[in-house]
Image 1 (cartoon, rainbow, N blue to C red):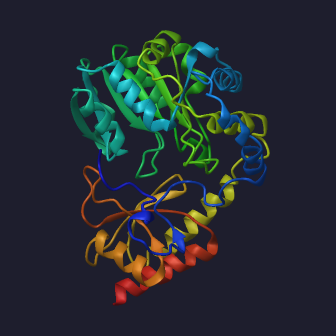
Image 2 (spheres, helix red, strand yellow):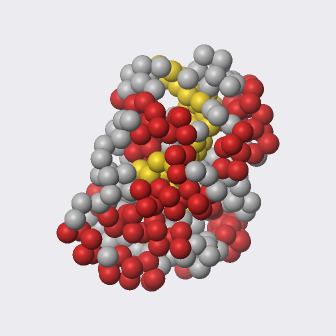
Image 3 (cartoon, rainbow, N blue to C red):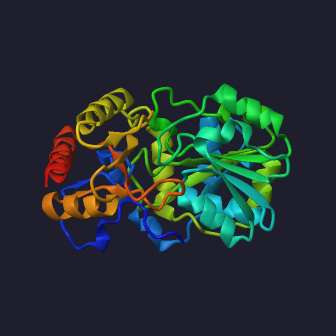
Length: 338
């Protein structure tokens, strides 16, 4: 496993006043969901459902598909490892920079992996590639590909299975997903996560959507009881209360645009269509900047140097509250002048 994900403040033994390293929605667990989980603690006395069947059916209804097209997983990461396991000893193409667990999952399952850079990928796909892993929105860049363009690629390469990571789709202005196209795309797997939008990364809850035959093939490799009872309860609550738990996307993206503009005075800032974005420091390295911000301001950023195609100077930021955003700007301004 690659060392160096976000939300790694536990490694440093310091008080974190503002965590910009994780892309999870910053307002935290909703009060209603918190109470429901507290009221559900008694469920820990029993085993959870083997394959989270109630949540599987609820998710199917939520997305207007049949239950056989849904597989509930222990976070999106388990989904990537299950997919790679189901197609082990074949080949995969990963669009970079990308979430490291795509590569780790493929390597762990003896896949022949090739990498293509984000800006060049429209013309990259080889007909003999078994899987293509693509984040939409991409992590760490925050860029997206439009559904019509994805539709074009998927239909052009019918012998390739596209693994579309939509973990951050809720954080975009359009919120567009390819779910509505599943009935016409037999070579599409969509990976979803409930942990980012609803601030429950500690529970680990994700799911797969796809052709019923593909989903069954992947499920054959899944361990029983991999999704715990509280995660199942969280998922059921989220679906039932989806309207009241909707992200304030317009405000979040407006705050992101404001933060990006502030930071442009001190570092290079790259365009993004989500609540997180890449930056590049001209002074020193991202690791040195991370250490400075943590020690002097209690601020944590994501050193992005271990993403393929990025450099030791790249770092990622996820928008927080206006007060915390101001603290980040203050810290980076001080860094550039120190």
